[in-house]
Length: 264
Image 1 (cartoon, rainbow, N blue to C red):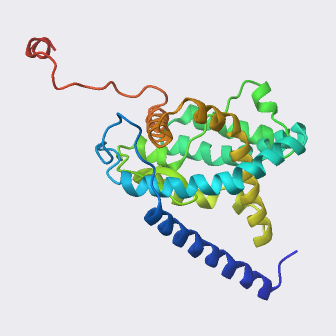
Image 2 (image 1 turned 135 degrees about the vertical axis):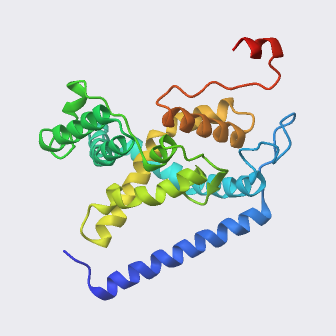
Image 3 (image 1 turned 60 degrees about the vertical axis):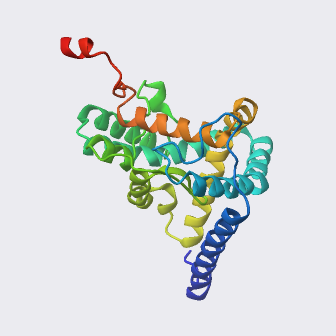
């Protein structure tokens, strides 16, 4: 059922106001707080992949505070009070919608076999798995290999660019930031026909993702001396592996002996 025009307009205005408030809050957080580097760590801004580290650390503080105040408590309540069978069904449906866009990105990268496999996975889970609620494709050994447009750009030689932490969205490279804009029209939140349905689906996707990361975030708090650096390096390495399908190019070193270079 479609929302009345006035209600729909209020929703859009509220969303714009919330977005403006978030941006203002992030700028205020940037002016009031930062994440100091751990003792003995390289100086802030010394990593060439992260030239905006000072700004990024401030946005990181804002995102972290928002997570601790809202996202993590809601995710804990969801995990502890919603039966696992229901949570798994939600995760399956959201993942199945993403599989269709992954198939397209495999094909855009020229990986025909992988694209057909992901297309088959989407078809099987949609029509046999009750719209993706079940996951018979995995039982048939058709594994999920997620791809996004940032990976597609990387596959075709676009460099990652500087690392940046966005309010709410979290870590990205500039390449992945552009890729996210292309990915957005194909997210699960675009499936419902009404604005209310799209907002609800977007909130459910965020909650599902945060719930899946609860164990990882607890472990991070225990082992990371500098959480910002740990997450940045992990993100950059994971994206490098994703672009190269788990086989990134070997690092080269300028201090290799001349004799060794001559033999190559």
